[in-house]
Length: 244
Image (cartoon, rainbow, N blue to C red):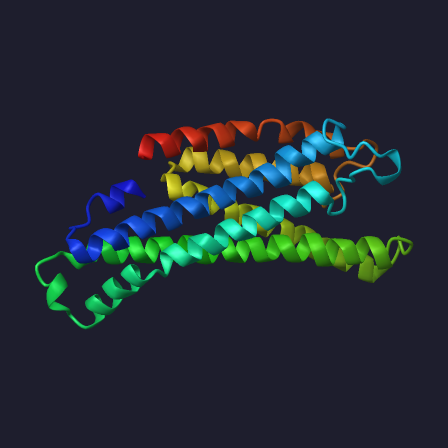
């Protein structure tokens, strides 16, 4: 991100727009990291009973939304909402209108870099919202519906189709967030591929979607892999401080 922003010619018109775009993109990145923290780290803590309600009659379950999940998702939604506010701020809109109308305020500036910065930030936001929407739909509607209404129909074709659909939605959501994470940090292809592989292996352990393993419960494997996720969070924090 900062390699793009640093190439933008600045004056009074573009300065505030660039600042808002940087903050908006940073909030998107924070939202993505919240998704990893909620979906992975918190998941592992609950699975191994490091994080529980203290009431044995109302234990947190990893297969359905729980209170820590819901609180984390609310925070994530708020972060994305603030990201939208900054990315669509008046200063950004003013620059967009200026480029469209060939404003004299931008006449002596190379507008191509700032156009790229705006498009890049808006693309990250759009992808993040799609990923969050898929994540929210799978977690709070599809998964809950399957658990509630179809849990006794183990041989149902409808249950099978919905489970496959749910798995594909979950995987798509994760891959979208990984893509946004990689694009924000401009990671090279090797690191990006490693991230995709890590989350795909975790997905297989959590769902056994293709039925490769029938004799062992691989769900514990997903929970163990969740404890590797803090590496991503630490890397994100370091990257943020380096970029400031």
